[in-house]
Image (cartoon, rainbow, N blue to C red; front, side):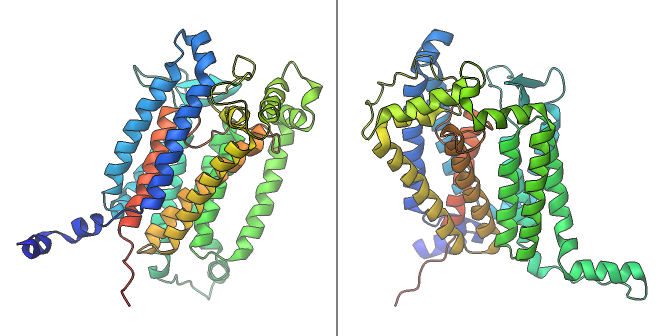
Length: 402
């Protein structure tokens, strides 16, 4: 009877019923749980003062965390091959949403930038850049996974244009054109908001997938040089970016203005010492440090849990990233491997950028810390991405005995 039941299952059902990777699942659940607790501790005073309810942010984040974990489980049970045809829709939809942030009545502003879609009913405002990350990962992975099966292009060598195109194809330029065009469009829309850190993050995600797919290394050197030059021009040609660079170099030049937030962040980190002041005992969270439930939650972690506690959390992130790349290496097919590479690189770069900003290693750019920063939509999308990785892990071939 059991044999008959197994034979009646479709190939898709059999592939999706494998065991998910438990170490990766445990790390995700652990980081999500710790993140919600620390966000609650960090936001307690701000929520009481501004919302009249000390659990205002916590209850919403906890609800989104539970919903996100449930959605993650459902996604992990779904055959990830379906994401191939969905990739175009997700990418196209995210580009449309990035345009809509500039439309009056739809987009919402904050901190001198237009990065959000307005709240609709009970739904909070959210950043379309979160969807754009997933769109790039899905589309690049789906297209590049078929790279080795594409037919070789043929050109008319009797014409100059044909010989030129053949040369460009030989060095790999023509293959990069659609990916470069997509990254330029999204980067341009993000700089229009402006959102420099998200721009860097998108470029890093795209580059990681292109690298894993086997694109020639010379193009990364050329692309990296071009990106650095472009970011330098943007940073120095706009007052918004120039001001942020000036404050980054010397926060004390405006300690009560633009330099106030980073100075308070450094005070919080330094106050934690080795063991911290204790969970819930932060002093900086009492309206000294702005945006502490969002981009600046990690300084409160350092203050309350100290160097050891903060280091343990960074170790958990490191283990998650290492395990993600391990799963990519052992994935069943190239599509699954590229999906994991893109998602894992996103987490790695986002953690680096957030920690770099709050410690003043990098200029202030406005990037959240995965699993910790307040934001229901962002948390759900992050957990959906974790579900995709777990779905790929279900189809990893079991090691042969002996």
